[in-house]
Amino acid sequence: MDVQAASDEALMLALPDQSEALEALYQRHCRPALGLALRMLGDREAAEEVVQEAFLALWRYARTYQPARGSVRSWLLGIVHHRAIDRLRGRPAVAPLPDELGPDPGAPDVWTLAAQQLDRQEIQRALAALPPDQREAIELAYFAGFTHQQIASTLQLPLGTVKGRLRLGLGRLRGLLQDRVAGGS
Amino acid sequence: MNGTPHDFAVLAPAEREGLEDTLSAYALGALPDAEAAAVVRHLATCPDCRALALELRATVDLLPLVCEPAAPSPALKGRVLEAVEDARRAGPVSLVAPLPAAPSFPTAPAAPTPITWAGARPPRRLSLWAVLPTAALLLISVGLGLWNFQLQQEVRSQSAIAALYEASRQSWTLSPTREAPGARGVLIEPAAGGQPVLLVHGLPTPPADRSYQVWLIRDGQPVSVGLLRAGSEGQQSLQLQQALSGAQAAAISIEPAGGSPSPTGPIIMAAQL
Image 1 (cartoon, one colour):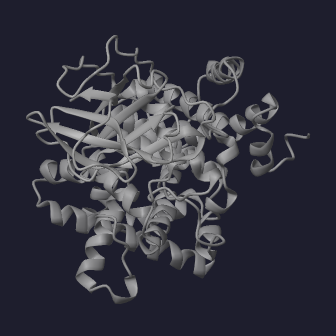
Image 2: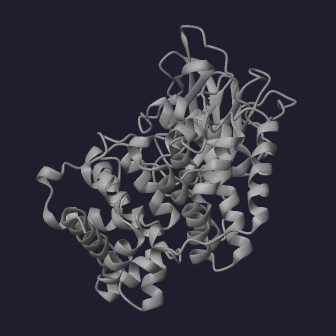
Image 3: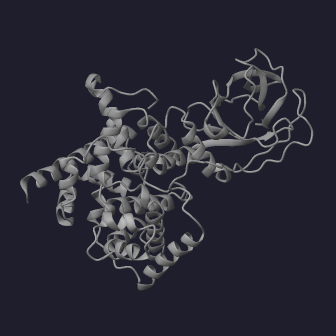
């Protein structure tokens, strides 16, 4: 198998048996994985450990990967996120995968496919365009690993307000990104 | 959130908003463990909420892409390859095709003497972590009505169950008596509400005119909480009909088919709670 030319999905199929497949996936995705882990944990050593655990999980659960649910990169980054949250909350890494949603009810929608084409600047711009209170709530939740209750007590807000900000922020973010996808910018 | 599916077509706007609040926090990983476990169980039964959760997850999946990529230290690649090589040498990946043909509950030694209804039972408590993998797989295979996922979803389901365990309050290992020395059992109490679940493996098939009946003992009085259902591969399960509160022990006895109002047969497994 020509690992350089192979798609991520093909590499996932080969992953359990071929170490070259793992090496190729590592080369392609280690940098964004470490970027996320560093942003969340702030400590290089811990971040690299999380990345190592995530690639081990990628290998271990390769057969359960479903392309219809998203790209290999999203899957890997989801595992990194999950592991980093485990650390932030000081609990043992017990759940191997970040995904309990079960089978996708249908083929990936246009939004999912299009969203994979968005680049970093576009997503950064969309996040920056959120109302600051919504962006703050989302960042505390996703990157700092706060629960909604922790956000509420940190910001001294009612829990309902925090929940509302998370919902509105996510909805708004999706809308903004959809506009960019639709606008072809 | 509970086990009742929602129909978004007829949902009041405020109720839908409340669900979306919860599912948004869930998608962002911002729910406390117990609440996340409740969502996981609900998603297994509610297609509309699952579709919404998938949609929210698709947006959340874009968030990590805002991070500046970072170059790992050169040694990391070697450590990753080595970790995988170690895992490969350690044996086949048990979670990939994990229907538990040969589940191994933590071994609980057979009680030295027959346990009677009046007898004291030795306490036996194992850590949750010790029973997690097998019990989680078992939980999938016995199909409690919550986990009707496809085989390829198993690891995902297992992750869901792991979340339940993470949030579970406690679990107890049942000790077998001489009546069924090879049997293994575990009783799990979820913290996030919901009924306790009993999982048993290795009980002999009862004669046609007999059933395994499960009891909680409160102040010396046994109260029936249901009959064990036969599952595949010699596994049996029961979602208890009541919470464990106030019970000092749980026991399984063999009774006339369909159950008995009070225990008559020998105890085959028991746990002190």
